[in-house]
Image (cartoon, rainbow, N blue to C red; front, side, top):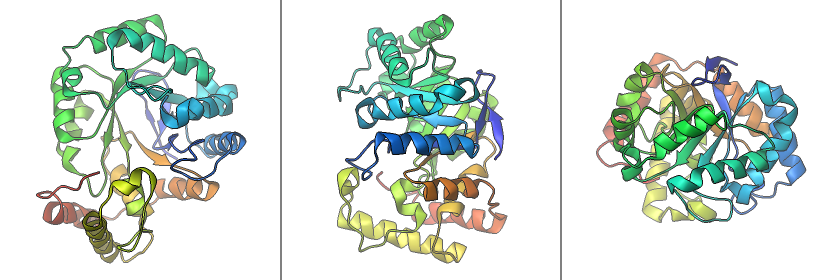
Length: 310
């Protein structure tokens, strides 16, 4: 596993990180008990993962509790990133005066006295513009020692451009994968500014694993995809299988992202030990230039002018 300095925390982040949305989340991810989640997180650390991403809204705070319990004995050796904006009780609250309370609630669930970083969880453009007072307050909370770095979790090129131009955040978590490449042109700017860049949704909610096709059906949050969307994604997956000459696409999808040195880490959703090992193995898989260029071309020719909806 390779490691890269994480923001201004004096800690090293593994290039494969652990996404905590699935922990205890039986609504979208199938059954997982508290103890099973704790053991999965412990195994991730044992296998070299040092960056763990969670949020209050993930399974009503259960994700934070699992991560806190699993990592308490090794707290100074790991990086924990959580979020502000969507609370454990299901309410949305981006008010400046609630941020300290939200962080303290996360700290209690995580059983720690600081967060290595906290990010605003998909805030509106009025916040990303830097004029709302949020980042002034986050700097205060950083000086108080509650957090060591702060930033945003966002989805688009437009949002990233605003953040780069209008704020001094240390961490940006952004949607980027083979099917969503629009932010790529700004990554070198982020690197020049010293921003820790974390990638979310690397497998396009499972499509880039190669396991879905035009006949797949979905429930939960994935039920948002209508039939034409499913058929188009299936077509693109088949194109990617032709490019790689492989039906298992996970290692190609993850290594594509890691091939850009401006990226610090990739958040991978892990719900069992098999997925954990598969994602870790992908970190050492080297994508050759020919396939990488074909994946860039796939986006330019098939997606760029007609973007997919997440």
